[in-house]
Amino acid sequence: MTEVQRRRPVRTRAPVVLLVPALVGLAFLVLPLVGLIARTPWGSLGERLADPAVIAALRLSLFTATVATVVCLVLGVPLAWVLARVPFRGRRVVRALVTVPLVLPPVVGGVALFLALGRRGLVGAWLYEATGYSLPFTTTGVIVAEAFVAMPFLVISVEGALRAADTRYEEAAATLGAGGWMTFRRVTLPLVAPGVAAGSVLCWARALGEFGATITFAGNFPGRTQTMPLAVYLALETDPSAAIVLSLVLLVVCVAILALLRERWVGAL
Image (cartoon, rainbow, N blue to C red; front, side, top):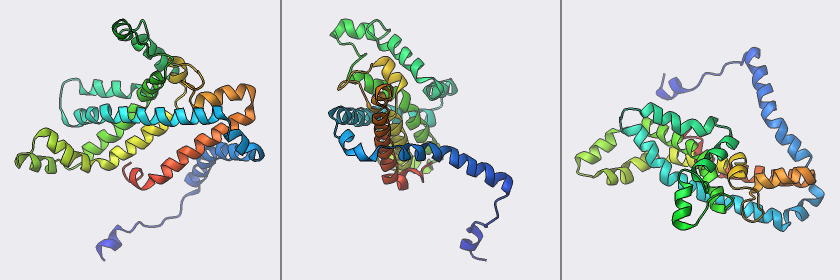
């Protein structure tokens, strides 16, 4: 028997006790999306998509989600490296704190941001006194809120990739005289590139769909802080058809991004 034959997966018939719940679970996840597509007002789709308010919200969402992802990369990759490579007392506590935004209700996250970065917050008060600038209810506030809730996705993905990477390459680079920064840039980053790509995609998608922390910390001002999720919420109260169209746009954008990067991020998870 060859090595390929030994590694070939054995096909087994799925037991009904597993197959039925699996199909129900799949239907549970897919049915809402089917309902969204089925109820879309296709006849007026073009007219609604051409609405300047929709275009402004979509442009703002793409901009803020992208900038928030860049911020998460700049801060999150080094944080993931420290958690994966540097042994220190309290590392488990730090890792737990990093993952808190994953389970924290987004509205609570927005309140926490207010208390820390608001005009009278722990850091925000100093910032306002020094510069006269206040983060809440600004486009920058949207980016901060999105980065806060999305960064854990990046950190977890990159840390997992770092822990799975073979450290012998880094040790060999250090033996050859490479410094810590050169080793990280020329050896470590290429090794964990799939994990970084996976984390970036998840981070961007989470930032794009962020609602609770954004509306609490940045408000819902058209053209300035009204992202697509906030526009959906507002339209749902006055024009449900418009809310459906906006939701469809978000769905299409997310599916397109995930499809384009599928080969890079699926293999890293």
